[in-house]
Amino acid sequence: MKTLLVVFLGTYVAQLISDVWLGGELFALLALDMRAGATVRLVWQVATFPFATPPGPAGVMPFLISSLFFWLIVSPFEQTFGRARTIQVLLFGAVGALLPALAVGLFFGGVLYGFGSLTLAAFMAWAWAMRLTRQEANFFGVMPMSPTQMMLVVLGLVLLNFLASQNFVLLAADLGATGGGILFTEWISKPPAAKRERKKSGGRRRKNDLGLKVIQGGKDDDPPKWLN
Image (cartoon, rainbow, N blue to C red):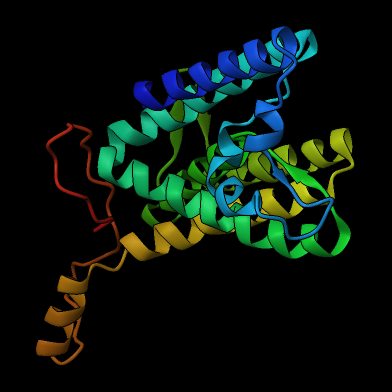
């Protein structure tokens, strides 16, 4: 995910140069702005809102902290599930954030920007995978966390975001992204091949099949991994 972080950084620097130094409106072009209802800009803003960050000196540290948190969550996720699955969970998170944000924003107005929802989606997907496999995560080798604790952390971050912003669009997006992370994990836990084999065997399950198991991976050329 280094490439994606570089893209986030590049677009942020471009917004700083455009809006702060040149008096442009790059941030306004990228952010999902629904305060004026359905406008032509929404056509591309549904895809560009994760790359929008408010320019200005007050936004530098929040951007760096968000980038660090994204790396700390998404990087181990990629090491566990591989690059293909990581891209997929981020897409699930983006779509999960977008749909409820549009539903709320087009009726009540609001602006959505930033990639925080994508981080929450990956975090929730990871927590849900640990729940399905009955495992614990160990952050940095010193901070073991149960799946329930991980999910509580995600929900706590969603609540803190809302209390700090008073933005109902952001609340809808964060909740939708976490739901997208859960749907992603449920999807990869049931590969089509396993379903076909189950049908051929009459739906019987082996006695020693106790559940799902996370497959360690992460190489660029690895095929997508299932949770069984």
